[in-house]
Length: 282
Image (tube, rainbow, N blue to C red; front, side, top):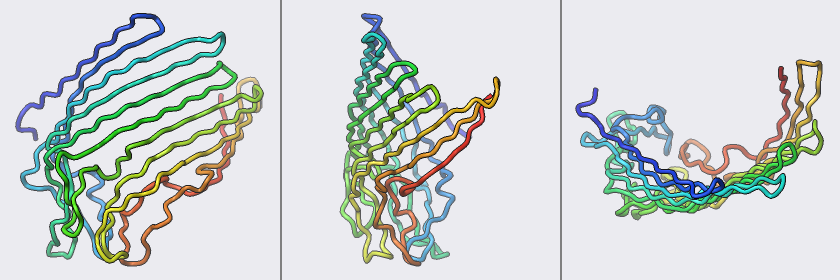
């Protein structure tokens, strides 16, 4: 099916001036073929009409060139083990894929066309830290700041001003997990994800006209408690329970009714959710 060979090189260099220090630089390239993706085959509902994505006849592959540099630092403070990762990254996207409304077909479907935008740049900094004592506690956390911008403003609707910022891509996001062994059998875990504000396309129907929405940021935090029993020398049982999205940080402006925009969703997938579980081990 391919008309020509695609050359996609990668290179990686790692240097350790000390056993507790790892320095790395890397380059990688990639591409996305001009094809229909699985999600395009699911027809979305907008304004009591169906919406479907078509490919521009002249759609070219999207190519990427990514550069990164990082420092990985390790140190033990007695039994306490620590690791710090600092990283910078820069990605160039050529002929980046973008979507725009282009009309309706004979069946009355709203047509969105995937075409090649001028290009884009993604750059940022990432930091991750891990601290723990084996069989006592473990903490991991990470934060990323990035900017994802088109080279030129992209217009997705005739009634909306173009945007250089990529849609559904936060400038800030973070995570953390913390696990503590209260006893040999009882364990407590705390986990969470932070997602910064993003731009989302909101199609007319439930609202009067197309518009670009800037969403709020979200803290999706949860807790899990687990207790282990020995049923025999070879069989173990874990009983666990907890809460996901403790603060119920959830989208509060979803469209409703027959004229809703079914793809206008963002943020955590579930509101506050309680769970219980059993796990057998051999």
